[in-house]
Image 1 (cartoon, rainbow over the protein chains, first blue to last red):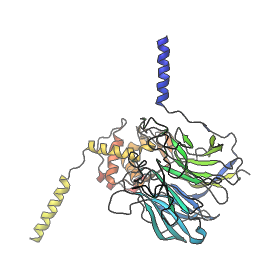
Image 2 (image 1 turned 135 degrees about the horizontal axis):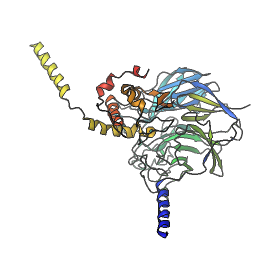
Image 3 (image 1 turned 60 degrees about the vertical axis):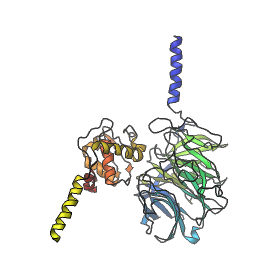
Image 4 (image 1 turned 120 degrees about the horizontal axis):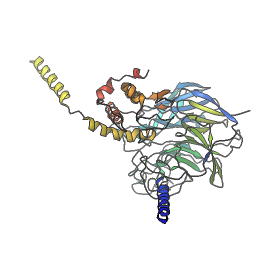
Length: 374
Length: 137
């Protein structure tokens, strides 16, 4: 009998080790739903990025390499894009407007590129360009990661701006986790910070580090596909895909190592461990981590007060579970998680429009607007 | 003289094409495994079972075997639902992954001979080259 009991206890612990534990708070389905949605742009298979020009006009990227100008739901293809290397998870990624767009008509794009032409594969790049009508001019390559790779994985990417004249963009580890994310002399697995003209800010954290890529702002990332600026604190918030389990929300600080792949709450897709470490004194812990993985993409705070009880909450798209996730944050902790528009499709992106409504990019559908019930 | 030289060169180049070593099926499957783990595994999973209702299974998939060339076209050009796989409807989008024809042949050979799947013929890059987008209509 005693033997039996200790066997059972041993079995219990082995089972505990074998499967990662769901991380609270657990996702909830709301009891009462007082909103619905409208399709505002249709016919876009993978609407990766979107940027509002004003209440009626926006730009939307389609991953396969199309940039749309949309006015009152009508799409026009923008011409003059640089060559795009479409492979695996790569293609045309995010689009964002210069903080002074209304005067200079400048936009930024991240995309997968092979600008060298002499080696196979591609890597993530940041471009700026001037938009006139539905045409791009002054197309300028501001940053191109090297070396090129034929790997299909982990290109990132999102673009955001702070109030101090910087542009931030993220890049995944390009499927080469043992080489890229922890090495400051290599691209991949990093968040980058540039001045708006593409030059390197003098106070970037690694400008004086010999051999380091001077544009790096933070490192140890796996595949960041959501970024936004917190409306009150001005902090840069990011989410990234972990492996199986271990998707993360991070608050990005200058020079900080976020740990991938030295520390993680996830495991390999095959079920084998990556590391037994979930923390390290020299590496930052995530603000929150998802187990199981939701496959996060896009990130926005709701600030408008248009929706009942949602002001100040964080919204993240789930590609895997096909809902928008609402995260309620109190005292620097996620205290509640809720499904919004469950089973809507793979949510690639979420943005708060200038009108205060939340807009989603949903794969196979297009751009959806969440509308509160009257 | 000129003509005989022409035929000599033509004959030589034809010979080169014929004797150019083609990958064995086993080599193609092994190359296909690498492609699978890079481009496919995130959705279809290492078990090939996919996620019911979201990502269709490749293991014992009726859709896959019903029309092999349609499946090749799906990888080559991208595939958009609704499709019915093992009596379940899938409405998602599989983007064109940007694989070249040889890579598509390799990954097809892997998928067709994994997880208990079996297909006698070897998919060649020539067959992928010949596969038209019309297969998806």
